[in-house]
Each structure stands twice: as structure tokens, then as C-alpha cells.
Length: 389
Image (cartoon, rainbow, N blue to C red; front, side, top):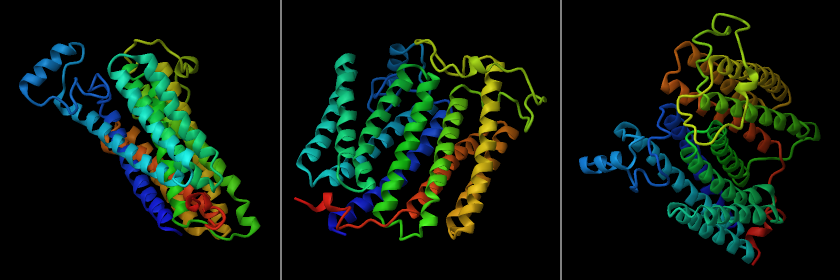
């Protein structure tokens, strides 16, 4: 492994850990109802940080009369943006290292960063159409450069993740400008989880995860991949539940809902993705029947995931991957306990935040299992893109 490859592996590990922290802090911001505590983007009441002095607060209240300044919340949202921006810089460095050996890929990554900055600048000055065009270019260039890289999947994803992060920034902007529109909030959650998952996979593979496995054991990859898909879908359901404020739609009853096995529900309204623009969705706009439908589907999804991952853990343990099987099983049990506790105790903020972290860790345990089932990287063959002039 060359010096550049070691640098990429180290930075990917740090970025994956940092991304997990950003996901957790983002969940804390959302669940503490601070998502609109800064009504503008990327500034907060027109400031790079947030108002702190009396005259700044007075100016902020006058500028945004519909959104009075809340000192206990604004800092959370803006700190989250700072953390996300720091992660973006780390991902940019990873993409540059991964594509440095190819001149056009190196320049493509640099140009993507410039276009992203230009898109933000245009947006801040009210030039929305140029901002959108620049952002599309900023997203597309890393995807094109990464997917066309003739190297191992981990190295390609190290560039692709830059495009994901830029799109994630746009989702963060839309979360504010579209007033917590549920489909955008759910997408923002999935974007954060996807960023963490991609960085985790890159870190695991670049750090040496994988080995020479018998064909029978390598065949288990498709079952692990299915588990990843199911967990991702359940995370999306969780995001939809949270963004529609349906976490307590069934009260504090479990496994029943509002004291019934079949309460009044409205699945059509509950799962309508496209709703009006200009509506403030803070606090939710759905009636109880629609929210109950969302909560019930989320519980059914949890049951499906629990049964499948329980079976998968048993299957992996019998085939020699006991450490990975135990990790999946333990995190699964912890996640179920956190979910039930959310309902039983009325959605306490620490438990609800931990539930988001548990979902990310459960996904990570499956990604680590998938990485372990793959062959080790052969740097002479798979790493050539990093070392060729």
C-alpha cells in the first residue's frame, strides 16, 4: 500500500466517524424541533453564526417577524451546518486523493467544488436558476468521475460520495426553504445515512476488510445485501414517521395503537409524498388517522426487519461469521428496545436521538459484514488508479 493509499484509508476512517457524529447531531436538531430555528440558509438570521447580542436579536426579529429568534435552538441548527460543512471538506479531500492519479478526474473534483461554492453564492444573492444549474454540475461531475474510474468499488465510491454530499447540502437548504416538507426532511435523513454508509464502506475496504472466503460463504453476500436494502427502507419509514410527527400517533400503547389492534387509519393521506409548497409543516399537518397509518406501517416494517435480520444472524453464525452475526443481533435488539422505549416513555429526546444512531449502527454492522465477505483488495490490480501517473 502506497503512502497515498494509506492517507486515503486513514482519512476515510476519520470521515466515517465524523459523519456518524453529524447524523447524530442532525437527529438531535430535528427531534428538538430546531429545524427551522434559522429561517434562512446558509446564514442564520443573516449572520455567519447566530444572533447573540440584544441589538442582533432585535434586528433578527424585525427581519423575520414570522420566525422570532429562539436562543436555545438557533445555535443547534447553525452548528449542525458547520459540522456538515466540515464533513464536506473532508469528503472533498478524499475525492481528490482517490482521483489524483487521473488528471481529468482531479480537475473534475476541483471543478465540482468550485461549482458548489458558486451555486451557494448565487442562491444567497437570489439568483436561483444559475444556482440550480451550478449545483447540478457540482453533483454530476463526481458521479461521472467516480463511476468511470477503472478501480475497485471502494475507490470509485470515494469520489462518488462527494456528489452525494453536495446533494445532501441542497436537501438541507430545501429543508429550510420548503418549511420542513416531509419528503425533503426524509430525503435529508437518508442522505446523511447514505453519506455515512458510503464512507464506512470505503474505510472498511481501504483499511483491509475482506478475505479469501469459500464460495459458499461468499454466496451469503446477496442475503446481506437484502438486509441492507430492508434496513434502508425501514430508515426511510422512520424518517417519514418523524417528519410527519407521527411517532406518538398511537399514544404510548405498544403493540396496540390507541388501545386497539385496528384503529382508524388513512393510508392514502399518510403516504402522499407530494403536498403543497408554501405550507409550514412544522408540527405536522396530517390528522390522527393518517399519522396512525404511518406509525402502524413503521411498526410492521420493524417486525419484518427484526425477523429477517434475526434469521440472517443465525445463518451467518452457522457459517463462521460469528462476530458479525453477534454484532448484528445485539444492535438489532438494542434498536428494538429503543423503539419501544420511544413509545412507552413518550419520545424522550435522548432515546429518540439514540434510536437514529442505532439505525445507522445497524446499517454499519451489515456493511461491515458485506465488506468481510469480499475478497481483499489487490493493490497491484485494484489500486492502480491511485499510483499510475
